[in-house]
Length: 129
Image: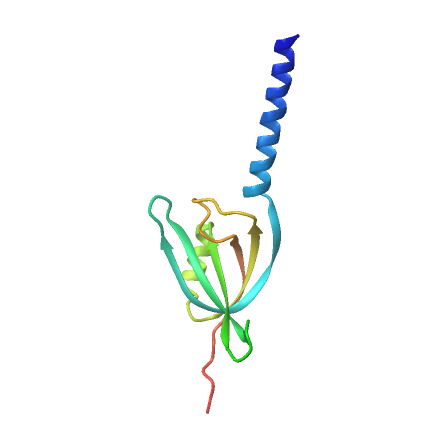
């Protein structure tokens, strides 16, 4: 009887731990799109090489009165095809679809936001004076 209770408790504990790990690291908390000009895109890392990028969104946002800052979107990319498309789109106006996770994993990148597709790429034309 005692062994059976321990077995049931062990199974419940394993299920709870599995659920917590899934929720913290694999559950997609949100998803959406961001548009802007890609500032940089790089593959880096010590053990796990991941793709990291920064998108500068149009418009300005100021946290405090009197300061002007650009609105930046930091993201990671796990798909090689998406990374290749972004590598060839430097300086273009991009519309990216992303998934937001609660926490990061070393092999997924350093950002909670993981871009999974490039929705559109438009070249940026210089502004005429």
